Length: 428
Image (cartoon, rainbow, N blue to C red; front, side, top):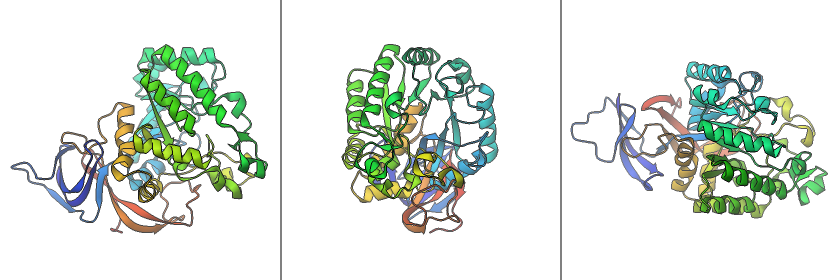
């Protein structure tokens, strides 16, 4: 199929290009941006004037819930919601039931994803059996089953010797390790950033030191093991400095921040809204400013949706008794555009962090509109206004602080390998 997208504003984070141009697609790839090659004849032409075309978004850690927690969400519901939100690739986390430390679970997830005909779904395997932090998972088998990395999520491995062996094993398997750093004993009883808000609300806090100490431990072991590592959901200014010190020292490390940590602070949880119960917790304004600046300067590699859909009951309890996490696939793009409008970073930088860098972290082609690149694209209307409610949310998870709000910016089309796989019923 040959396709020409006509008259849209093109954002290419790899080249830095930002301008109006046609985009020609052929054989699942970007053929040209601007003037079509001689002899090119599109079988399909789509007028996207007034819209923006950019590489498809990537989430480095989506909790798809299936198998085991289908009352929260399913692979089909979230993979289709992803396409509607402009995502073309999701990394499924291993906290399923059974937990993804067995290759058979990875095969099941891949099978369900193919049937769903939604966004591409990749698997992160468990670093330890049952995510219990005691026995190492069979990482060579997980890689053979198609896992692109291994992680223990936010379930801290308390025994440093176990983590040391796990990193060495992952290195031998050629797998990247996705780590969410936290010192167990400092963070185990907390639910909110340790500060004025947690004190006022009477909620046990998690100090910055929990992340900083955990991160220093992890970086030391990463350097010894020589493993490729990605540090997930960094939340403090000090963590950014540690990450960049490690890069300068030659460690193969990257880091991301969740969009929620760029948008909000612990003060937003002041009304006991459980949708602000996150792990790691939202920090203070100074940390949010440092995270935004780091992303703008390229000191943080990526921004993640960190999508965690929940059923209503999971959030219907006192703050500290609710399950952490927020559903983000539907609202990620408009919130990213809101940060651009506020001057946190520009649109090219936004898509570098939300598409190009995640592709590079996963070792995948894409995230660019350079000729020859995979044609995974989103086309969105930056001016479309819509209300977030049960009818407009595509994800099965409605646990978002945006519920009832009006947002600006919405995806209109999603292309996967050059094929139009999702289109809004009508152009906003």
